[in-house]
Length: 265
Image (cartoon, rainbow, N blue to C red; front, side, top):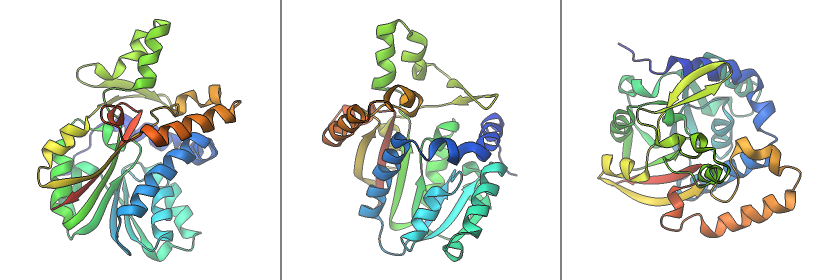
């Protein structure tokens, strides 16, 4: 029997699917985030890998992976997101390299076969309180020496802490709320949950950490982009600074996200 968790989040992202690319793709912050994640994928993925993507959204990363000669099974449970990506794939040069499937990451036990890599971007896995179950299935589905590449929102975020200086303690410490934090998107309210890199590493003791980098540590989170777009020089300086500090201990786990690359032994 299929498990559906956080149906409000599924509705929210489905509602947003028609405007998602138009709103986010032009953002220099989103472009920077995608570049960072793809740089690590390029570094660690072997040639012509078979990749399982979780919560694939509108298919931007699936299309990029296919353009790099990888084969992708692109999964999402949002009907709107899947319909958008199917249309994009149909009109791309990579339709033969991408297959799509309506699938929750809580239903990975229904998948057969094995993969060279499993990939989840931009905090999609923060929508579940059962990340441990997802990780167990990732272990099962990955081939020996396979890669797990996750972009996760941690419970500590430097940029949000700064709002305590303006006495906005609700935003500054929202990720610390027990039982998850209520998020709002496209008229829907849904729970989000935050995980440290250590939580994931401890759940996968037979995996080796290849990389751990903060994402949007000095670079502002997307919700602040309108404050920085008029100042491209400042934004570029923050990007250059982040490149220098992204992997430093302690700092690498207090960005808006972190990117964790694990290899199955």
